[in-house]
Length: 248
Image (cartoon, rainbow, N blue to C red; front, side, top):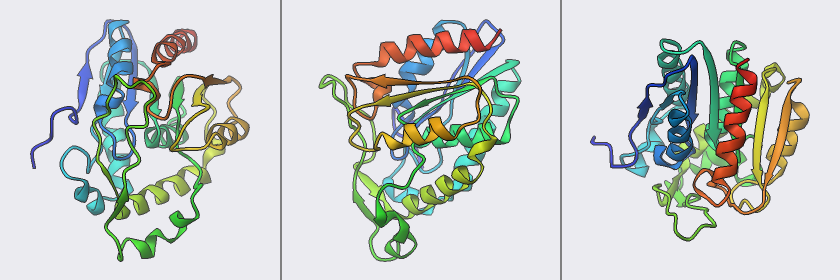
């Protein structure tokens, strides 16, 4: 099936030995994190933004995927970067943050990770019964396009597929189990007013990580999709500073 405009992968060749894998959120698109990837590419980084399986076609396709498909997608993106760069970082928005943590658990050679309003904890009790609900209802209301800047519009699905949500919970459980394996430097951005994920995701992660270098930056003027919102320039600037510092 043809991939819709704004949902496809992005790849940038840089001029340094630094590579950054940038990961999208659940039911969102690669264009949601494109501004961050393009900024880093303009600064000389090699950048890969893979499209996650089930995204960019129809929301119904997310009811056919496994969380292992998403892991394969990001592992493939990481392998592409390793062919061009020797110092690799991973950055992720929302579910992309959970996948970022997964890669950090499996790849201690990563130089650092950047999390933007990342997903980790199951905060809605209904998520625990998705194994049953997915056979009763196909989808619920969408969770995307949570942006304070009224001039911005996220390309995203308008429904949240229940089967995909079930796979998402399995990914989160997998990541939670090995969270203490994350030892790389970590930069966490969290919007104080995030209508999708509560602040406890950031606080819990900051407390549990064994990284010797970790920082939590509060975003005061953005909602969930902060990579497109009013604080995006702050995210770009501090991410580049973090990458430069950890690349030495």
